[in-house]
Length: 320
Length: 286
Image (cartoon, rainbow over the protein chains, first blue to last red):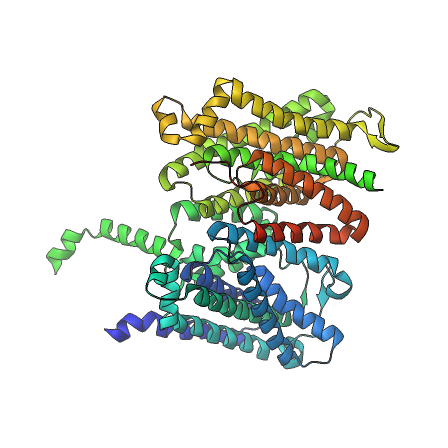
């Protein structure tokens, strides 16, 4: 029973590791898969913070940007090794997330969300203002790990990091700490009544989310080899926030499916690229109205309904 | 220079106050924050620009009507059924109206032949305020912004429709009981909010250049300033918009164009931290 119950969680790392085989395919397909994985990281971070801990946060592009631009700045101004750049990027992003939580802890729910939304608007503007170092809207190129390690090796490294991060989040939500996160999300007053210091746990959730999102951002810039303020604007933030919602905020596999939809659909419809905004906008609305539990659960229900129409339950009962 | 900066700031603030008032008005009555107002208004302003060869007045009326119809239609056929079904969930309506804004911005990008427009109005001359030269069109823009606020307050107090939206915002159940068609009031107010977004975008197109991105900027600022002013508080929104206009103007003088937006968003962020419920607090009682 326990193994059956935990099977989806245990299988997830293997499911995520499987696309490593694309290294044998190579070329653009491999590149797109790696790019998808960088958004899977962000999707799981959003799932942990927004949906599992109940914290209204829309600033994922800001934490991601901080991880990425720390690498850019360190590479341009110092001789720090790429591995240390990535680590510092993750730590600085965690620090930003902590400071954000501490400064907005008086604001509740929607207002805190709006403060984080402002952060997602502010950071790209700051990057544009600092264009001599950051390259602003035109962007900046770095000698990423993909060049130093070779694109195949770095592709595998991205997949490895994604598997580790997702496995960590899947493990975390099943620990005592993770269960407290969920309790805070569902009823913070109740959590406090039981003696839980919700402030401490929320601070922890923001720190972990900032760390992982910053790590994802640092991996991103090393993968793409360049970054601009356009790559991490407010639309990126909203897209990341939308990933778990699209896949399913209630399923462990939700952020995976949501990321696939968000990254692969534009690739499939590249011929109608100019209409993608409209397609995205429509998907935001349609999912919120018709699939509030996301694609996984929505499609599952639809299949169950179709199946029960094709093979009515009574027939099933008789045949058995 | 200080006076010049102040005048420019008041003009920018006056234009910004229009979408802000639109957001505040809609929230005050319906209880939802409509993110899409300025993008719908920008679509209307592009429509006006497209129809300018047929005369200024018909073009303005077409832009105004387009914005109203889109705002009214979206509220009537999409948002009202959702309010009925799911209540006033701010996060839900943030995503839904963000989606609407994305669609409308995408349509603006694809439907109109140019990505950047400038709406040419007849030159009415220059006015001198203590030796500072100000284009009369800018004075008209700010006069219209203030007049709209006063007209809205006047309508709320004197007309049946105005009173019905006040009643709806104060006590929804009672408003329904006395026979007010609440859904129609919601849609009407939403249409008027989008007209305010249109006027803001129109004047932005007259005084500066209007692009899809400027529409998004008006959208972000209209939404955020409305929250900073006190969610749903029209006066709070107006005051905040004027302050932010002055901030934009002086930041432009002292820090340069690139730091203008940074200064603005840092101040907005700081206000949200210090006063999470806005400068004047919310005006909505339900």
